[in-house]
Image (cartoon, helix red, strand yellow):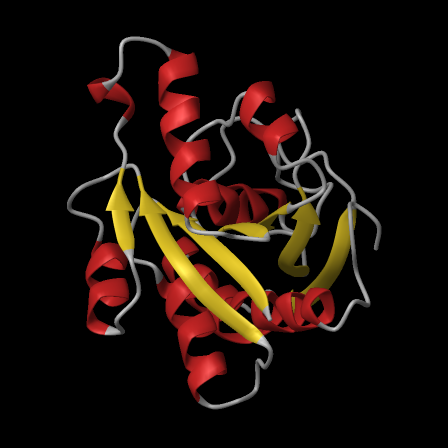
Length: 202
């Protein structure tokens, strides 16, 4: 059984996609053992509670320094017994100390086809605004392993989504979520649970 900790900052739609996939048995041999957020009002925490999943809020401002904050998160994840850390809209830059603690065991979903529209400053609607401004005809989502850089770790899987005439950032964001993110993330987790992807290698 693959035990995962899901880290989120907001609404938790990708978390919900994982929960639904497990409930509907599209994602097997996987259990969410912890949902961790840096925001107390994150809807994702309520989603976890509604589904009987342990949840915790760990806010950076409650800690004296980065190292103490890192260790609080590391301890919570390790105490939950998680094998894999899933970043599902977690808008916190992870330190090298955190990444090292779970080396090869952290994945992230990003709403573009990396290396396009990724790195520092590219998150949420900003990604889709940039894609539309550039005039690309295809965008999508990427799941990758996390390293010390921002969106620079090895790519595991990608899924393309067409950009349509009349798209706004909000419309494109929704299509990328529905057609790519919500399908891709459970699929990658299943591959990891099945031993088809492991330790930083796709």
